[in-house]
Length: 448
Image (tube, rainbow, N blue to C red; front, side, top):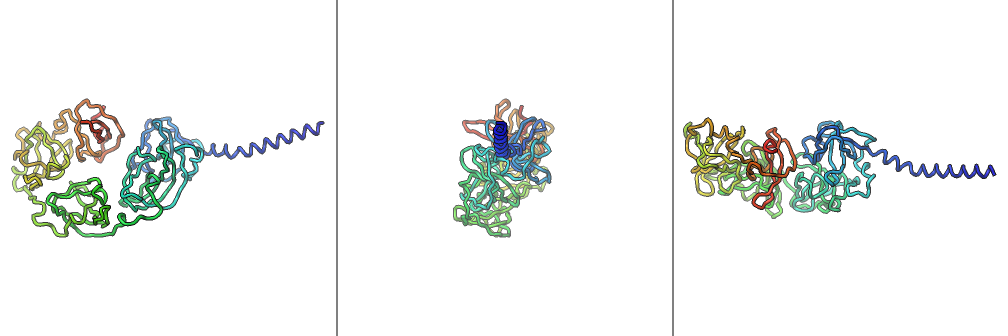
């Protein structure tokens, strides 16, 4: 009887030990998943392991995140690839390691930490290999959603290295990819159906070229963000403007396009121009402009109307660079005939402490500086030019084109904040004007 009882106890112990051994790997897997807690009062979550990458969102002190993997950022410091809940959605991004209090062991593999939630839309699995962009232009996002910010756009045939795959909030497969654009290594997300295994060829293949070309049309040309008339307009260049050739390729319209570099207001920019709009010899009477700096009195002009639009080139169809109030003093750089047949001045002026340039029609100014330069000149226009109106810019810079103007007290929705190229804080806002939803940037100091 005693022997039987001991035998039963021994059997029970063996069964318990076996079950515990089978369950132990699951417990270890859960224990191995590291979590982090935000140290700072406010912390920026980035789209890649770099302080220069775009901000996905801001997390407050004490927020917990799950750590997927760790990597070395372009600053040489350790960063964590993390995912977390935000605004009812699952998001993924990068946080510098020293900004988190970490518990648990961090794995170095980007796929290992996500195996704990295989049934979740946020789960990701490791993937590798090279794929190519399928459509004429594909949008690369900051995370796996069509609602995410746009990181960049890639043309058909662009090669991308797949890092991992996951199910997006639309239920589709998305790839996290790395790629090179304009000489810089970048990462982002693209929907799986926009990539294929073999290079589609044709439009994305480019050939290195060199030399200088000049704008041909009298009305000028639009410089596009990629080789297509559907590309965003980066700049508008006047007839006779010199550009430097970088590469040549076939656009989605079957025409040859040049990728060119050029200078606008001291900024060196790149973009695409169709080859038939350029010539290798400067056209006669190239831009029709002439310097007018022969006398000090003739180089200064004063704005006449209550508010005058300063344009990006000599046309009423050009983008508005600034709005200057009556009495603002500017300096003439050159004059030319615009595409409306009227005389225009290219002027230099000061607005909100920034020296800027643009075009104004000659009949909107009077020659000479304003008699009362102490209060109404352009040098003090930081207050008078607004007159209770905020200028909404296309990007975070006082040099950006004006998208709209908003009166004092207008309510707007805040999207995100960033540091502009002037070193100041700017806020991206959304608002409705004349039935149209508009987004743009204003100095953060103008909001409360």
